[in-house]
Image (cartoon, rainbow, N blue to C red; front, side):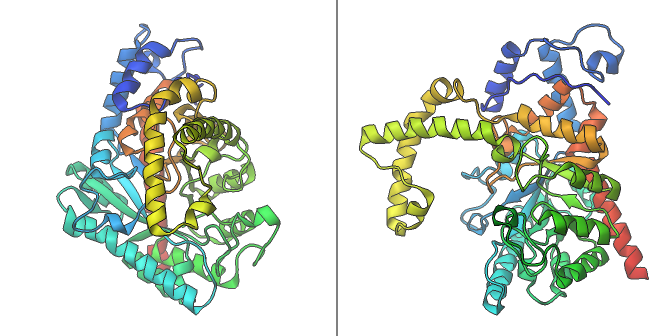
Length: 455
């Protein structure tokens, strides 16, 4: 397993600016990592920065890059407004094409609400709306540019044909309601992973959010949650443990007949957050044969660093707002405004952000650096060391709160590969991290499903 250097110069720039900054910024101040170019090629010549970037580009083009978590708003999946254009979203087709992101798992997300018939009906309608939107993009709006994959073979076939790949994950099983047959229905609509809870306890499982107040509903899984595990195993849906509580996750590990995944979580040992996985959970996933998709979410990677950066940024924007005579509002205050007032507030904030942009590097980043790609790969390194490279993957949580300096949208995807190359990961290892490990788990889950159905 390679020893990884810690060059931490990635900044939140565009891809072109990143290349320039790398050429000047990264000095070889640590031991040459094992598995780097000299060892890999048999050459004794030290690799230049330009050679490293060119090698990283070649690797990035050859491997299949896969991000397991990109949230969607169905307003961006209409005939008039959709992902064929470079919308103000972190993921869309132009950004995927620019950054070399091959596979995006679009998320059928439903926020947790009441556990009653009205809540279940609204949740189901929300889920179907999102399933339909994803199919509409791939089958009607841009079938020549993107296609839905239902298996690892589909991913490779579509990617080889030069198209982008859409896959579907279900964040929160709440829309299943009390009808367990909806799990098979969701699988037939393309769902290939599902979490049994989100933020708030569902009818299936407790959420990690119970830690905040030590407030639990099921003390793990409910009886229906245990039934759902068997049903997901039967129909080939990967079980996602990124949001449920630790007792629920440990129970899932005991019950499942197939490997499971964490679709967007990082290492709790490096950053204390209930959404991250502690070493016991990580080792359980290793034993289970599953995979943890490290998430590029600032507050999950380094909460302290992120808080300092946000405070410095807030001071800058507040100062600009005061100079303009504008009042900065909190999220609850914004939500209390009418639609017209919210639109006006967004316009004012756009003006403030435009004035702040040229000052951020000197007045914010210089004193409180943002969480960046190096912090992200630190979590990958940690989990690779603890549970093995074959159990670690990559996710962003784009358009759902994710994004870090250097990988803040799909167009910057190459920057992750650069950092992996810099740490000494080989092309084979990078391919495993980007997609190979996750697709291997999908294959295992679908194989187990076929065995259960044959029984």
